[in-house]
Length: 123
Image: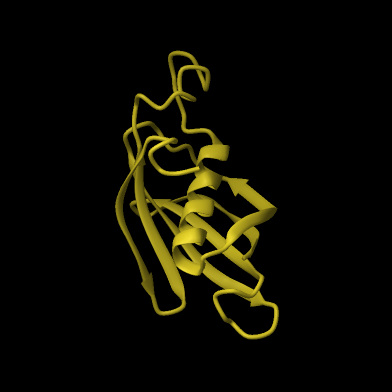
């Protein structure tokens, strides 16, 4: 899915050392919000995981193939700016962009940790 389809505004994207950061904002008009939850919308976890997939493709040219673990600690509200940070936990063979890898993700709103987990990516 592209960022246009999920209506996320990408604020900034870039690699820092062996990590990748992707700032984004899910607009209040996102189609998933009216049902999650009516009158008190929260950005669904699956939308956050889609941001992991978008960042993984931008950084390593990989597709998200599996979510190994995910923990959501605090909600992200519509129109709030957030950051997802990806770091390589383990790679099969060399740390080439094309190799399969386990990637750690963390979501932040300012200094608040919203979610964290591990995914697998592969070309």
